[in-house]
Each structure stands twice: as structure tokens, then as C-alpha cells.
Figure 1: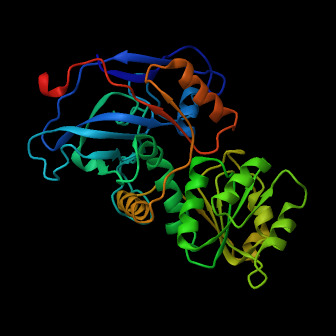
Figure 2: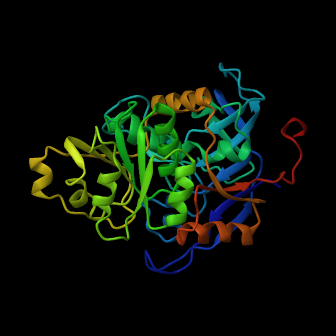
Figure 3: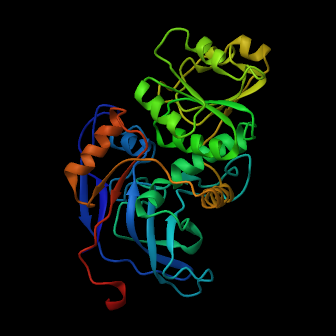
Length: 363
């Protein structure tokens, strides 16, 4: 029977509980009008999946498939489909309810990230899923299942933070990407390199910095060292001794440091706060006209633009580790542990083995 990966409910307080993973058997769904049946080949983890297991994510559900990132093949089209996706390799849209408004999800929209919540049954950690034909996009042809699954959520988040929000997605400009090693930060680095942006990175790991340099970063600093901001400023080009933007997923004291690095009117484009849910906004930042811009996910239009860019530049997401088997519990726990402990450099992916069921054509 086809399977879905879900969490099992146990008692515990948010932040203290850690919900076990469970595989449940389900029938193969049938696509309705305008829908497609996708057979998934791979799915990828994001930090939100770890937060879901810790009950630190809003609206979590115990009976819908986890993981918002997925790559698969359209094996059946329902009546009235117009896009001709039968047989195509696709990536699932990792969010719903935001089509093209550049400011953000329209007021009153049911915007949400896919997987593991009560908002919709849109997770990708399963053998089969039915989606609207407009909730999938053709995968870049150069990507295999693992690379395709690793792209959607990190790709769209990084694309909006850099290209839409930062004002620094231009050749010759300087940016700092914090927390290099995470999926979003690495996608930002790859986009920046392809655009000709001078990308500098920060991490608490010298090894991760060294690996980022091999991917095209111009320099890197270890934020655990006192005075790292002075070290970074000295490393910037002589003709441009300032940052145009900081692409940040950490939060914490970044704004205090930013005032010493950013040009007047520079931008902190922030897509996450893994260091803590609060941070200081200080008067020197106001006097420097620094802009703090929150950036969450992206629109369907931005998702299509990101895919086209990846296809054009043949960008392949960095994979930290992949395991085989949707019901490989030991392997799945290893992926979650790597994410929890910050060991990963790149994305964590599960390759979905063949379902134990007849093909849809024989049902």
C-alpha cells in the first residue's frame, strides 16, 4: 500500500515534546477535474519540520504528510487539465495562497507553507499525492530527484530575500550571507555567484566557510571570533569598503553589527531568526537609514522566476546527506539529528523507494 510520513501525537509541552515519526498506509488518490496525480521520488527536510516535531510551529496536524519539498512524476491527469504534464518530472509548489503580489500574500489570503499542518493536505513525504495542476511546476531538466527535491523551499526563500528584497542582486555589489551551511543560505550564495555579486559568508564553523569559498564566496568570517566585523570590512574590495545588504537567517545581534558594515541606506533582508525570536533595533541603524526587511517564502511568480534562473544557470542545490526509504526510520532520525545539531552543509533529502502498490493504470 502507498505510504505517508506523519507525526504521532504524544503528551508534552511545546518546545519540550518531540513527536515520533510514523508511516501510515493510505489508498492511491484519484485526481479530479484540473488535478494531477504525482508519484514522489524524493522529499527534503526544512527547519520547519524540526519545529513541527517540537510543537513550535502553528497549526500542526497529526494526519497530514510532512515535508514541503518534493520531486516526482505526474502519472495521471484528471479531466480538464490543460498544461500537458502527463509524464513530466515536477516539483511541488512549497506554499499556497500567494500568486504574484510583490509585497506579500494578499490580505485575507490563506497563505501557508506546505506539509504537516491543518491548512491543506499538501505534504510531499509520501508515495502519491493529488494536487491542482497549477500547484506543480516542471523541474529543471538537469536536476535529478534528490536535487529537485532540495530546491523548492530553500530556493524560493533565498530568491525573494536576495533578488526581490535586498536591492543588491547586481554584479559588483557586496553582500554578507549569515549562517552558511543551511539550505537557504547556500541557495543565496549560488544565486549571488551566478549574478556576479560579491558574496561574503559567516559561520561558527571554519570548515563550512572553507566549503563556501569553494562554491564561489569571496571571503568568510567566523562570527564566534571577537571583532569579526572589522575582519570582514578589511576583506571587502578597496573601492567598495562596505556591504550593500546582509541576507540574514539568524537574528540576534546582527543589526548592531550591521551598522558598522552597511552603507547608508543598506538593507538587512531577514528570512529567519534561528538565534532567537527577538532582536534589538538600535538608533544608529535609524540614523544610517538602514532598512530591515522581513522576507518569507515567495509568490508563485517568484517561484517560476527562480526555477527559470536555476535552469538557465544549471544550478544544483548542495546536498548534505540523502537516505533511501520513506519508512527508513533510522535514516530519517539521522537527518533530523543533523539538522537539530547544525551538522548539515546543504539539504537533507529522503529518496522515496517504490511504493508497495499496483500502478495507477491497473487500479
